[in-house]
Length: 153
Ligand SMILES: [Cu+2]
Image 1 (cartoon, rainbow, N blue to C red):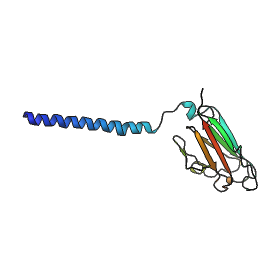
Image 2 (image 1 turned 45 degrees about the horizontal axis):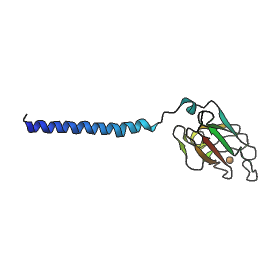
Image 3 (image 1 turned 45 degrees about the vertical axis):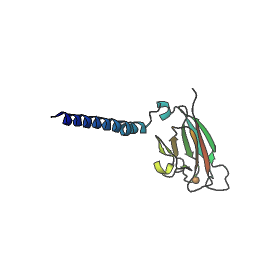
Image 4 (image 1 turned 180 degrees about the vertical axis):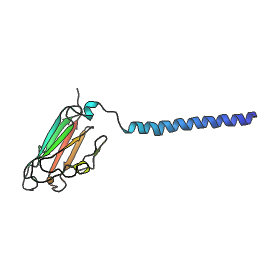
């Protein structure tokens, strides 16, 4: 091997190493960061907040439907919301904004269990703070909001 060929192969080697490091940084670390590492108490909060879908909710004249209309939860404490359908009609809990949680997936009962039959519950764990407006798909006058805040413990 003459000096020229040796020089070219060293350059080729350096390019190959640089390319694989760039690949590692871009592709591998991007994938590793895709699913965030979250505290166990955020993934499985010790408490939950309860919302009732009250009797008569399928009637537009019933002003109360999701009760309470607005609920608040703290990350790591009670960022899980449980809706119980105590009406005699099936309902849904469906995001107004196509919101999909980084861990729990789409905020929409239709995605996980379909409609919520009478006496059944739907639960959703929000792993990020924010305001989440929702409604009932068959009865769009039924609206509610979940507010999730960071806990400062
Ligand atoms: Cu409904």
